[in-house]
Amino acid sequence: MSSNISDAPKSLMLEAVNTIHPFPARMAPSIVLGRVHTTTSPLTILDPMCGSGTSLVASRMHGHQVIGVDTDPLAVLISTVWANDIDQTAAFQKASAVLHRSQILARKLDREEAYPHRCDAETRSFVEYWFDADSRKQLAALSTSISRVRDDHIRRFLWCAFSRMIITKKVGVSLAMDVSHSRPHRVYDQSPERPFAKFLPCVVTVLKAIPFIYCPSGLPAPQISLGDARELHLRSGSIDMVVTSPPYLNAIDYLRGHKLSLVWMGHEISNLRKIRSANIGAESAPDDRQSPAHIDLVLANMTKKEELRSRDYWMLVRYISDLECTVNEIARVLKPGGLATIVIGDSCIHGTFVRNSEAASELASRAKLKLIESKRRAIPANRRYLPPPTSKGAGDALRARMREEVVLTFRKPRKLAN
Image 1 (cartoon, one colour):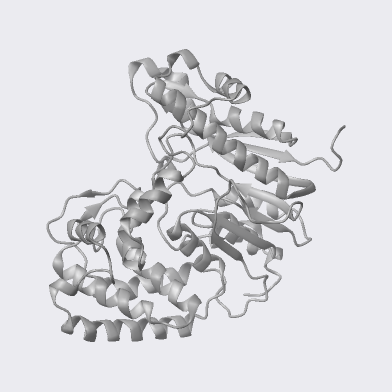
Image 2 (cartoon, rainbow, N blue to C red; image 1 turned 90 degrees about the vertical axis):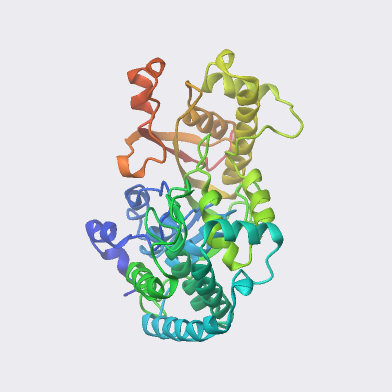
């Protein structure tokens, strides 16, 4: 891949952004490309909630320096592999060697050893529930062999292919369906696919989808790490552009499905539970049960407060507080004159419509970001995580709004008014 890929037609760029791993509610590549292709100067572009990395890949393909942050270990893994250079020949050769070693190792394993390495009792019970004994044996052998690969980038690539066998909609190596939509439910007595048979096809699928196929590509290396958008470890005024999509209220519970593969990478269920409960959009109240006046004002502009149950009210308070921290951090790290695009959809809590986009707009205004564009965009049916409300009380207008997301673009003033 040449380093002047930014000269490619936009239509080719759209075709090139093919995901390497299933991920629910991905950001549309067209949103990112519509912003980054208009400049010929290299920018530093941040996605502080990068998910699977669509914004990072699309931006890097145009020659920009990209920085990604996410709390989800699997999201960081996927985006790191997808946004980096890959030597296809070396990666495939290592994958073949790993499979061969795993097949030998599996012959020596008995069922009592067929679990993630050194996992605790809770994680062991979780693995027993979601994987049959034969799949556990093969997955344990593969995970052991992958963990022994010394090259960090190739090891991450192999973990990504490994995860792709598990995070599927219908047919995978677990006993579940709908894992890729983070709604796993156990439907099989025996997994429909076997890991050893599925591994190399997944390796090939991932390799074909990585756009940076030459090593090195000559493009700036991506910087992607575990972190929290509410507290970014970045210098103030260091970012030219932010493109991101915060979790909506009633957020997608990514870790509910992702933990099926993360446990094989050494993550224990208890630690994943802590991450999950602390995420933005989690359905829980703030610890202190306090609602500052400005948070209450934002809430009143989002929805009909009197229609909310007490639990839903406090869940909203926490969401607004988390969103405020995120927007404040975006404003802090942006350079004067920098742009921030926030893609956010509205929600429904027990029949009550909640305008998350109104909260984002108002909080951005409080952070001294100027709204320069607001557009509504239809969400394709295959990207919607949940269907819109169907109750009679929802009404046609509410059902229509739940099929849209709002694309908000802000600019940080070059000089703040006194």
